[in-house]
Each structure stands twice: as C-alpha cells, then as structure tokens.
Length: 175
Image (cartoon, rainbow, N blue to C red):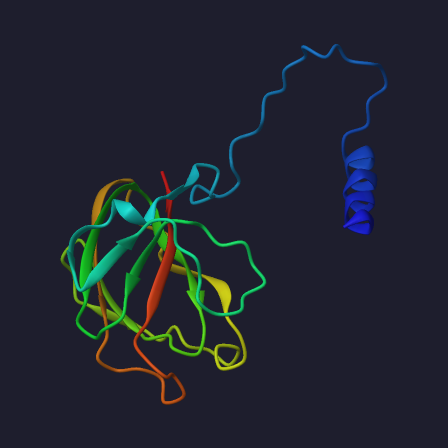
C-alpha cells in the first residue's frame, strides 16, 4: 500500500502543480463527469431493503459459519432454495449487489421493471476453493428514475456447486 500511495502522490504532484500555498478553506470545482454513467452518485443499501420476501431470511448479527478472511457485515439477506424470490425498488441508473461467493453458491434469475427474466451464473472457478466477497452488476445504463428488480434463486446451478445458497451483503445503486 505504501508503494501505491507514493505512486498516487507522485502523480498528483505532477498533475496538479501548485505554485503557491492555498488557504485551507479554498474550494475546488470538479469538471463534469467524462461519462454520464459514472458512479459518482453510487451508494450501498442494506440488504434488508428487499421486499416481498419468499424463501429468504433477513439475518441480523450474522456470523459466518465457515472460514473467511474478510470482515463481513452483520446484516445479510439469506436465500437457500431454488425459487426463493424478493423485490428491490430503487431510484437511479444502475443496480447490483455484493455477496459472499463460495462452494454452495447458486444462480439467480432477475427481471428489471417487469422485463423478461435473465439468468446469471454466479459460481466461478474460485468458488470451489474458498469463500470471498463478490460484486454482481445487473444493469448500469438504466434511464434515471424509479425501478423495480425481481430476483429469484434459479433452479439450475453450476455442476460443481453444492447448493443454491445466496448471501447478499449489500445492494449497490447509482443515483
């Protein structure tokens, strides 16, 4: 981290040369984003924001039962069976979630604003080796506004997966 911090410091000194000392109260105007879909208004939402839960549990004071070297949140949304579903409503242009991936991970089917369901295979080559947080981006170029996402655990799963488990740690949105 020290090497990375030094690299950033050197870059900023070259990119933002100051010829005089500025007062601590100086303000700076940032330019407009280069990409209108940038994540400058991103936010994490509690997994407990999910609604219309069927087959899912809101878990508070959660302690993960397996060995994991990451600090995990105390609130999660836990689904264990195919067909378990819920809805999340949000305002913004992007939606996704963070989850804990591992040996027992299932697939999901999701639908945004009532459109056709899309299946996402969440299990990857590292899942059979260890548990770790993983980011899943469902959509990132939505028209800014109110949206609804329906998510269900798919009946299909990766052949190496030992289950249909899904542990959602946070929802990610870009407003």
